[in-house]
Length: 116
Figure 1 (cartoon, rainbow, N blue to C red):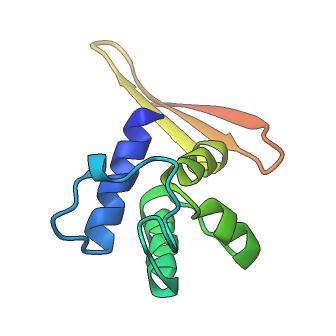
Figure 2: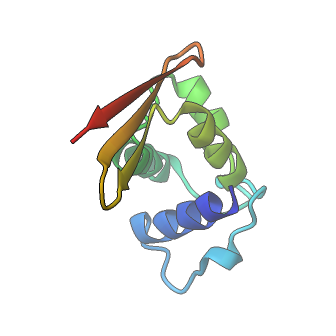
């Protein structure tokens, strides 16, 4: 999850054009809004676009959004729990295939093996 948090911080810095800031300047658990990073409601819209564009996660409920976007830690946890599709491409000398994992809202995973 550490790699995800670093990537999230980098995406936040780039998306919100936080010049002069580095990922290590953002505390995982610090509030993103108000006294923490000082983001505002316009920034929250940018973060929602960031989640949809980079992680395929769409937030539709405003109350849920406030919880999810409260810190880098809560964003990373939500991404890990709700990322719907995982792909693994396998290519060797004799075999080429793709393994696809689809996660339902109830948490069940369906695995598909696609041979070339």
